[in-house]
Image (cartoon, rainbow, N blue to C red; front, side, top):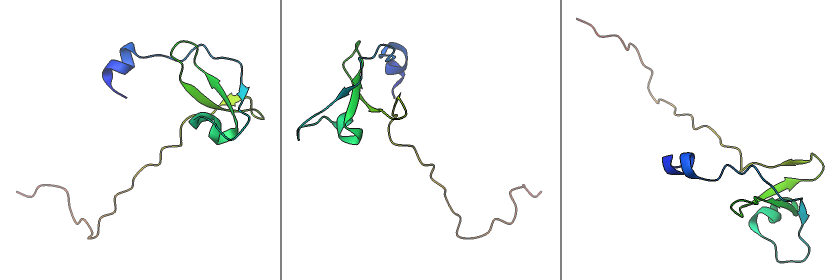
Length: 79
């Protein structure tokens, strides 16, 4: 997310009632669960879980762990 989007972008506070997409042609948000909501301010679609009654966020972000191949013996400066 850019700094401009953070300050001037849509905050997605107003949503439509959940819609269930029928047929083979589905949007990206509806492809996840079959049900989606739309931000009434900007038109962006979000996947919606009807059983949990909540909007699904994007895929969970996984943290990247960097491994060190050789052991670190000391990080302190020696004089």
